[in-house]
Every structure is written in C-alpha cells, then in structure tokens.
Length: 134
Length: 217
Image 1 (cartoon, rainbow over the protein chains, first blue to last red):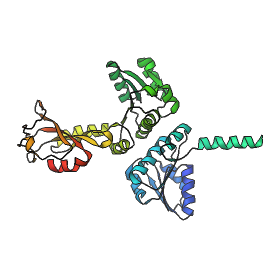
Image 2: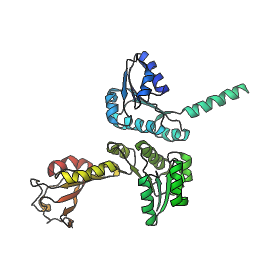
Image 3: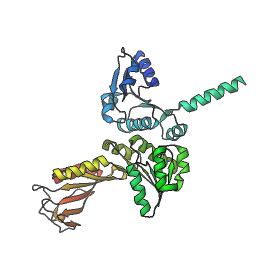
Image 4: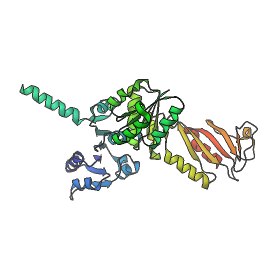
C-alpha cells in the first residue's frame, strides 16, 4: 500500500516506521525539520518538509497514488482540514485522523470521518480498568 | 442581526466596530487572554474569551440564535473548523470565513462555508489592476464557487468592444453587471456599446467560466 502520513509526531513517526517494515510505501510530511528527525537516519520512505493543508506538499508526497492518508499532527483543526481536503480533492480511499477534543471528534465523526480520539479512548480504558478492579 | 465574529485581530476588531455602528448585535470571540483584555476595554460584554472551535464556547456564544458567523482568525484550518461546527451543529444560516491562502477558497466552499474572503487575493487583484489590462480579476465567489464575479479591463483588441451588447453572443450564465468608464458607472442595456479601456464587472456561473474567458480575450 502507498501511505501518506501528515505529522511526524511520536504517533506519526511510529506509524511510519512500522508501516514501512510491513512492506508499504510511506511518505511523511511535517513542517518542522526537528520532528522529521524522529524517523531516524535509516528511514527509507520519503520525508518531506511541508504543510499538510497545502496541495503542493500533498502532491509531492504522491497523495494522488496513495491508498491511505493519516493525519496525526498535534493540531486538531489541521488534521480535520487536511483530511477533508484529501477526501474532497484527492478521494484517497482510506483516511484516518486523530482529534484530541472529544466534542469536535464526535461532531466530525457525524460527517463520516474516521476519527481516533485518544482522549475518549484513554478515559474509557481507565474507567474499564477501574470497574474491573472493583 | 446577531453576528458572531471569531478572531479579535485587526480584521475582527474593525469588523465588530463597523457592525456595531450599524446597530447590529455583535459578539466578538478571542482566545488570547492578553488580546481579550484589551478588547474588553473597548467592547465590554460584547467580547468573550474563548476558542470558537470548542463546543462549550459556541454554547456560551448563544450560537443557536446567530444569523451570521464570521471566522477571521489568522489560521485557515481554524476558520474552516469554526464555520463547519457552527453550520453543521447549529445550522447557522450564513458562515463567512477569511481565507489566508487563496488556494484554499475552493475547498472551503465545497465544505459548506457560504462565503470566503481572501484578502491576499483581493490585494493581489488591486495590485494587478494597476498593471495589466485584459486580466480577469476575481472579486467574489458565491454559493460554493458556483458563481463568481470578475473584473476585467477591455483592451483594444477585445472582441466585445464597439458593438451593441444585444449583438454579442455571451454564454448562458454570464451577465455583464456594470461597466466603469472614467467617472461613470454604466449599467448596461441591450444598446450599450462597450469601449476600449472600459472596466467591466461580470457575473459568471462555474460552467460558463472558460467560455467567458476565451470570449473576452
């Protein structure tokens, strides 16, 4: 699969290296060169400096051929805008994004986006853990 | 009208003042505490501290009864999300977003923002106006980009000058709204004759855009 990841956060970098070793083609975009360093020297995918809400950067990352787009920057609004831009303009088949704000996550899930909300997931996990222990 | 403005920078600030002077009810929303402090000196209760993309802030803003929501922060992605939240969750009749990068205007409109304003594009247009005749300067996009208004100056070899408007074959969905000639504003009728150097303002539907450009050049 060809995968484009926006945001070389810890999650982004981890996903990039794991997906690459799974035999996929991976491109990573981040606007901060420091973040791209997380990929390590041996990263054989593409690491690009750029802004994910800019079509030019996405095209350089070969979004037009991609099967999967993942938006995991630290900013919810950037992830939401990038995911929607990719969906509308490039029609990439699988799109995933992280949104920290639970309310925004719920609102945009209604618009059909595949959103992962770590805030909700973490709270649920802890609650489950507590109720099991009780 | 009740207008909510998200973003208390220069644009938001000036817009708030303008609308209040015209007796509209205005609420300005600013998320930076220092800027908010300054604004509250001038606007009192008409400004609140909050992030327009957060649901709680939207509720506090009395967003359900707003007629218009304007997002004029410095970041396009914030403006987009703010407008979407207002539209989708609260069915605000009209959402307007400032778009800093003109390339984003199209996506904003596809995603339901009613009107977009790109100051970069407008300023660019104003600069170009001084330089080139025959350039199509986009002024405004409405209805999700379905309709655009262009400004262009007619050059000496324009095919539409020196003829009555009724004799021109303009595409469907294309109307010349006005012609600016020296000090006059002409609202064209069938027997109006356009001249070299006239600046015309045209309303063009999306599907007529390419035909229109070819025709006028």
